[in-house]
Structure formats: C-alpha cells, structure tokens
Length: 455
Image 1: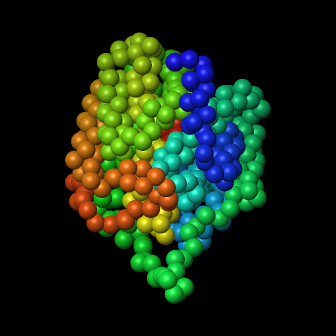
Image 2: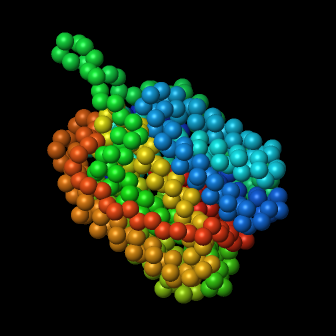
Image 3: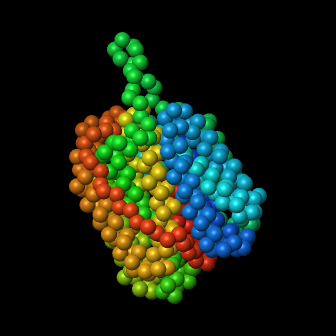
C-alpha cells in the first residue's frame, strides 16, 4: 500500500463527522492525557505511603466497584437531566477526587476517594456514548466510537509516558495535574458541546407523543440487549484478566517488572498506531461477525499466554493478538448498544452496558490473582480461552437476527433500535473467587485503568 493510499484511507476514516463530535473527541484526549491517578495509584500506595500490595489491589478493585454504581447512575442522569450536564458534573466530581488524593493520606480516606472516583468516572461514560449516538448518523456510529476510543488510548499513552518522565515531581503533583486536565475537559464540554438529548416527539397535530417509560428494570428485561450485556461481561473478564494475570505469569517465569512494562506497552502502541487502519478494514462489516471475531482474538491471544514460556517476544505477540480484538470489540459493542437502545433511553442502555465493564473491573483482578496464586497461571489462561470461545459462539447463535446493522437497511438517520423483543438471553455463568489480590513490585499499569474507560 502506497503512502498516498494510506493518506487517502486516513482522510476517509476521519472525514464526514459533525463538528460537535470533534469537540467531544478533543475533550476525551485532554482528559486521558492527564490521567495519572489510575496509572500510578498502586505505586503511590506501596512506595510512597508504605501500604501493602494487598491493600493497593483492594483499592484498585474499589475503583471498579464504584463504577458498578456509577454506570447506571450516569445512564439515568443522561436521559433525565441531559448529556452535557451529566458530563460536566461527573468530570468535575472526578477532578475533585483526583485533587483530594493529593491531600488525604489515611487508608480509609484513600479507599473512599478512589471508590467515589470510580463512581464519577464511570458515570460519565453513558453520556459520552449517548451523545455520539445522538449526533452521528447510524451508519457512521461505529466509526465514531472507534475514533473516540483512539483518542482515549492516545491520551492514555501520553499520560503513561509523561507521567513516567515527570514522576520526580512527586505523585501528588501528578494527581493535581490529573485534576486540572479533567477540569479543562469539563470546560471544553460546557463551552463547545451542544446538548444532544432528543426532544420529545410530536404527532401530526403537534401534540407530544408519550414515550414508554424506561427504567433500569425495563432495560434488563430487553432480551436481546440482556444477551449482549452478558456476552460483553464474558469478554470484559477475558480483557481485564491480563492486566493482573500477565505480570504475575511473567514474574512466575523469572522475568522482571521492566519486561512486563515493555510487553504491556505493546497494547498502547498497537492501538495508537493501527486503530484507524483496523477501523477502515472493518468498516461496514456485520456487527455479529466483528463481535465474534474479536471474542476469538481475545480467546486465542490470552490462551496463548500459557505457551509463551519465558520469551518476552512471545508474550508481546499474545498482547498484539488480543489488542486487535480490543480494537474491534470496543467500538462495535458500543455501536450495538446504540442500535438496540430506544432513542429516549440511550443513556440507560449505555449505563447498563457500562456496568458490565465495571463488574469485570472489580471481579477480574480478584479472580485472576486468586487463580494464579492457587491453581496457577495456566488455569487462568485456559479459563480466558474458554470464556472467549463461549462469547464468540453466543454472539453467533443468539444475536445474529437482533443486530441488523442500520447501514444494511438505511444509510442515514439516527442509530436507534427497538430495544425490545426478539432473542432470549444466555445462561449466566457464576463462579466463586477467593478474595485475594496480588500486585507485583514496580508495575505501573493497573487492571482497571483501561477497563474503566472502555465502556
């Protein structure tokens, strides 16, 4: 492929979206560029404050637990209060929590602030996803989600590099910078982003149409969407497991934390470098095909970790495989949620979907640590392989009819779905995990840093 063709492909990937989307994209980039808290929290707790690794893991898990409550809260506020007010309020709340971490030192205070930060950070996601679905034509929604996810990862990569270089300034300084960046993000949204919540529809006589009331219970009764959420939960568990299991597995093979740093950096490099290309290659493909393919990539990539031995290159190769799955899955899943959601309930639907990410962010670190410390790493990777295969089969068999992409039917308009009826849901799979979290030395990545913002 020539340079000119690559340039044309990149231009086609980023063209044709409304101006409001690019202000939202910029706010995401600014927000994530200053995202230092989650990246360096475990180091701050263990190195700076002298807390145990177990406590650091618990605090990280509390962030995910906060997201379990924050996601449906943000979804409800998004539909009732509006997209922009929810975004501004929750960004400011997250900024206040980041600033508070630069001040508080007691264990209970830190745990409480991180829990509240999880609520605020996850509560903003439904409003962002609903805004994209509101302002972007249905046939362009998946591309818009992919571009926003690219901005998130680009900012995350900048934060990781910049934070590492600026660590000599002190962790508290980084947390203050995080707070300032989040406030700036809120200012961009407040000044430049219009409110996109759909206005009440009217009939031919000009009278308002009474929409069916949608509660969280109503959303959960939507069988096709419930299936999508449960399958996404399986994928999220697979996606989140490496952020705890991979460093532990590499340590078990005698590799240093710095080796893990090199390997996990591949994730960000691949996303930043190739997200636009992957989006171009997958554009207009069937959502079910893409979700099934991404699940298989997650299964193969994580499962192959058990075969990597002590080779850093082999570990890096496994990361490349499941990272491609991540690049396909995240925007496709968000677009599928927008497709199934009624227009007036997009926030609630995105909130319930976000809750599956938050649940995985809480359960996976605990479960992965317990499995590695008990039966061993190979059992963990066998489990992630099985879950990924199960998810791929589930997408193919249970959602083939429900996820009919609007681009196959109508090339314009808003991406709203019926949000009801159709398929049944899959059988839930529950397991019990002993509450034990293991954190390795100087690892700067954490299990929920990306999961918390991937919804």
